[in-house]
Image (cartoon, rainbow, N blue to C red; front, side, top):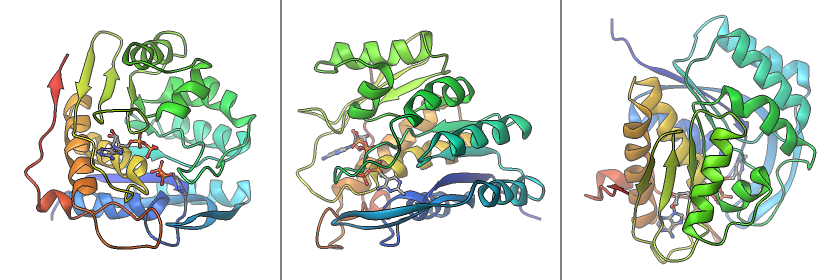
Length: 273
Ligand SMILES: Nc1ncnc2c1ncn2[C@@H]1O[C@H](COP(=O)(O)OP(=O)(O)O)[C@@H](O)[C@H]1O
Ligand SMILES: Cc1ncc(COP(=O)(O)OP(=O)(O)O)c(N)n1
């Protein structure tokens, strides 16, 4: 019988298929990892933006966790949209009970359309309960600013945010993503010892919907497959760069990234700093 790595995503939905649970499951499938999901919120959104969302009842979210964990324990877990402090606390408790070793925390706060996907009070909960459990946290610049309560204007500020998240908030490693920065699309990983830079050319495209979800899902799949964090991020950066650089003509607004892009591209961007 074939053994296959298993990954779980805990997130909200995107009926248009570009972000959230749908992006994560497509990514797991593309990489050859068995994908599972716990849905936290049902979101009405598409490439034009978020219209509204409904949080599922906490008991029902818990029941989904139990259904997965009692049957098919995942090798790695990713969380995305956890819209309120209660679902964050529940996720923290379930990860601890299941002794999850590989956990990627994508601290989703605001969709690129500008729509808030979590409440104000939920931010503190991320810092207190989820960061100490995570193998890596993957904030974009506004999320890194909100989590650390600091402005990020320079590369040094990005690195300092990574250092604060690891040394002051107790996360194992922080990947500060530069998608919202100017110039090259460079991301910085800090693991408490060294900074690694993951570089890519910035492509002039609006088709980046779900890029953060997809990137974190590749990292999760890599960890599920037993890769070290550095290699999982390196593969994630190559996948997301190819997915952005080979756009699909889908959607009237900010379209989804291309999950087949890596098959069409030779892009392998990573340099050490
Ligand atoms: N226009 C672009 N060209 C190339 N890479 C990009 C572009 N926009 C974002 N990225 C990359 O996509 C990934 C997701 O980044 P980011 O946009 O910062 O996160 P989020 O989707 O969570 O807002 C990062 O690796 C970032 O560097
Ligand atoms: C349900 C759900 N989760 C997360 C997001 C945000 O996706 P992300 O990949 O961070 O980036 P954008 O799609 O906002 O560019 C979402 N929209 N929906």
